[in-house]
Image (tube, rainbow, N blue to C red; front, side, top):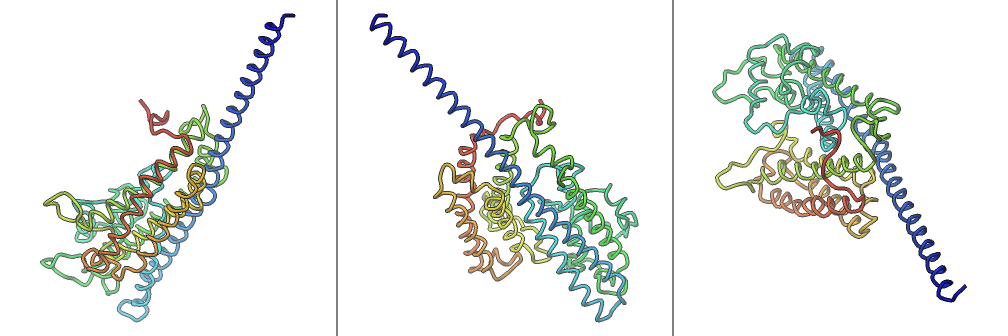
Length: 384
């Protein structure tokens, strides 16, 4: 065999070996990415999604029990006054447990309008509030039954409606006639009690359904954990990962824009600042803080931090630290309600939280997509 022929043969062999090695490396990389995204789906479900809905379900159960105790207590009594305090504490617990889940807009919570039925917000024009006030004036018996209430307007059903029912005359216009039924602590509070209990019972059904849907072996758990060509929602693990990234980005954007920037008045010229959520019950700042706590938990415990760390470990640590610092800053805000947005010291604290939230949204979202090789585009479940 000629020398040139032998060299050519060796070169061809080396090229084949290099090609085979490259194919094996690429295949291993693909398998590694798929395994990483599958772990992310499982971890987010076990560590974040299921515990979150379980906590919400428990808080609704507490709310239900407290309302029963209140509404069966003697009118105009020390016991009723004490039970009213328990109801308000249970209401706060339920609102905050929901706030830690608000970013999760996928899965069974999107079916049957459950998301909006839990809390109808934002309500820029106050349509929901007017609906609830009209029902309270008319004392429509259909809203005192949880089954019929579930078929009515979403604005009449959830936590935002219950806030008004519990608030009594605190939300009534100054020109409105006052009567004894405007507070759950008075003798003539039967209708408000019945309506409040129907709302809580309806929320209990929704919460139970969400827990059941995400339970091990249940329909949506199977959809989430087994993407593929026969899956009605997700074709592969990259789509479940992208769902989590969207939840992270949506949560940060809506929390920052709707609950921080707009109430602070950083809006278009001549546009009035929009009120923050749950300002009637003075829970605006606790809700804002709970929103970020939920996003921090999704990032840290849910597995997104590990995804960012694959491409930028320093950024992953900075983002987690920034969210933790934001939570700590909000804990220092003195006024829990609408006044925090106008008080000089509280307002400055709120402004300070804007930058780390924006960085978590822009840099964190970009890093997550880069690390998972994710692109925002067509999803087979989106339709034509």
